[in-house]
Image 1 (cartoon, rainbow, N blue to C red):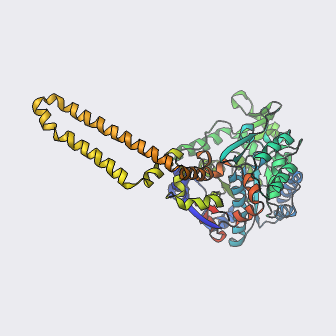
Image 2 (image 1 turned 30 degrees about the vertical axis):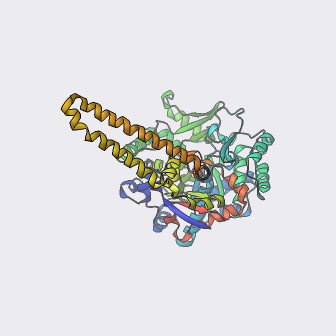
Image 3 (image 1 turned 180 degrees about the vertical axis):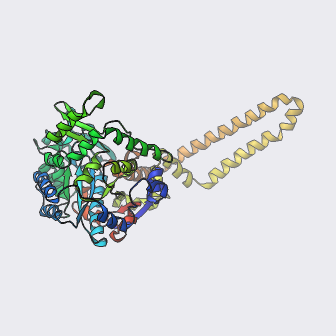
Length: 531
């Protein structure tokens, strides 16, 4: 397996993210510590306070994972948290149908690799946690599967039934037979397809909760790595993190000011990632998940009493979910994508206001899978990986231009030069007769040049037709590397590749980075050539 890398600054990522990877002080000052220094993690482990009793945490996690039929290594990881020397690294994602895009896989792999790296290099015992976004309520964002058929991206949508505005963890999956049949037809044929379909059928069953289906699939794929699943849509967990909800209620003004002030400071050099509202909490009601509207509440103490009695009805937003994680877990790091790295840059003051310590914010693994048919075609063309970001029309034009006989362009350029010379040679004559006609001469010269340029474009189109086979190959490469003009990791569902390459895919990806140099490896986008 070949692994090459590309700097993120060649792929259109934000200035904030690129500066973060470059360890520039202008952006690192908005975070607690530098995540690219191994000693930062040991320092954090020594200084961070533990807010949840470990025995209670273990019991809550065992209960939470029970519905996923967890493998023994997951149970062992949970029990290890009883020890004061065991810490966590956390990643998380929305619970998308059939597992989600490739970057969900990359997040999980990064958590596993970082746990191993810190265990080996920091005299710590570290276990990976995947946080299920089981209280998100945007069904449209989790209800699709994207695969590829005959060179085109095709999408399967799960029918929206009785969803309303309820949290994802509470949704029940139905129409399994029809939905999975459509998905199976879209998966690529291979010796591994039957196993991929079997995993999906065993997880996404009629009557199963969306959370249970997603969680089972995750632990099926990573059964040998001690991955722990966690989420906030749990009565036991809500009971443990109740003080965070009380903080959000009783210090709502301080919360808003902490977020807004740091966001404004960030905007002196960068773009803020997330809007700051005056409420960071939701309530689960009979009609769905509704934002707490403080303008309608005369007495906060009434809500605080509700929180004491029934914390499970409260739910965090994007800013408060990290607070819950840090309060609940003995956590050292959060692994996120570029957008998550950015919104954590708005949050350090909030962590301090809550009496918590921001974890290391670690960029997830970012990669493009180069499959053998594409790998064989790449050397035929003079493009770099990042060139394929361009629209297909631009790539075609570049290829034809670069592969057009130089004599053709030379001849056309000489033609244009000769035209200009002919008109210029007559300027003095025309001016002597009637100076007002000089402008007409220039206009005629410009029109003549334009006509020749049109002829050049017709020649190029003619050459494009002759290069049709090569242009189809360029289109095939672009469709694989940047499907729908987006990074592969953001578009295609990872189960598409799992159906092609089976369990070996997980092993190959886990071995694609140099674990001894992991923190530096995460600073670049990787091109992973599959055998």
